[in-house]
Amino acid sequence: MDNTNNVSNINKKKIILSGIQPSGNLNIGTYFGAIKNWVNLQNDYINYFCVVDMHAITVRQEPAQLRRRSLEVAATYIACGIDPGICTLFIQSHVPAHAQLSWVLSCYSMFGELSRMTQFKEKSEQHTDNINAGLFTYPVLMAADILIYNAHLVPVGADQKQHLELARDIAVRFNSVYGDVFTIPEPYIPKDGAKIYSLQEPDKKMSKSDSANENSSVFIMDKKDDIIRKFKRAVTDSEAEVRFAGGKDGINNLMSIYSCATGKNFDETEKEFAGRGYGDFKLAVGEAVAEVLAPIQKRFYELMDNKDVLEKILRDGADKAAYAANKTLSKVYKKIGFLQI
Ligand code: TYM
Image (cartoon, rainbow, N blue to C red; front, side, top):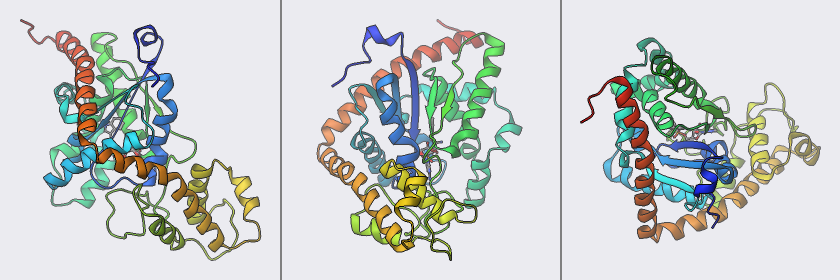
């Protein structure tokens, strides 16, 4: 275990924070767009990774399922290679300071800017019967998650860029009134895998809460046969040439996934599949993805068989996170004039 979060390094290293909602089974978009990059960055930063259960309840969740998924998402982080020895892993609701800071920040967030968030617009369209206030203020809680640890870098997929920009705006606004309270965070959006698209509708994001068509998403825990079948059924185009180009959303998406899974660039892939049909290519993508996921799945099931160990990691993580978060919160409370006795 690399104990790089120790005192001698703590002053030199910058801080990362990121999180995932336990609102559905995690798919390869979440892996390639987010978790894989956390793993690659973790040795060079002080790391906070949380399971954002408070964000998940902006859409109705079944309580037992939310509990189970929260633990599964934490296990998935570790199974994907997040090292709890150097990363603080925790469940968002276990650190109440996030909600406390979120309230303060909501008083520094404007109705107009929240109304412009595309995720809010999309989710309001999907859940017309439940356009709740939490859905609207969701990005403020996300800003609190980030700013409370003074994170420098936030590794996320491209869909979270707008929320990140809002977090920066809120931080700048707050700092302009009270001095340098918050670090202004930067997004880290990967070159490959920033947006993995649905296999059935390759102009739409692959989404973990999309249950309409089970062939749209490849889940991290899918069995090899299912992975191959889903890729075989992936929507492509009427050509037969594996080539990254306009009008070939399906093939472009498969090429991106192949690149994420194998490290091969588009030129290499085009050469590898020159003169071969889409069938061969789809099979190769499926096999490459299955190969990446196999060791993750094995570790996941081992971890889920050791829930006590997992819970201890999360309890320790919440303690460490709360310590750092409370420091920022009390600074904020002082700055804004809350009476301290
Ligand atoms: P969430 O739970 O929707 O997604 C988790 C992470 O996975 C990325 N992602 C994708 N990347 C590429 N292609 C895809 N198809 C794909 N689907 C998901 C997301 O960009 C994200 O990085 N609001 C956040 C959770 C959050 C958060 C935070 C993130 C709450 N607080 C603080 C960072 C920092 C969300 O809904 O992610």
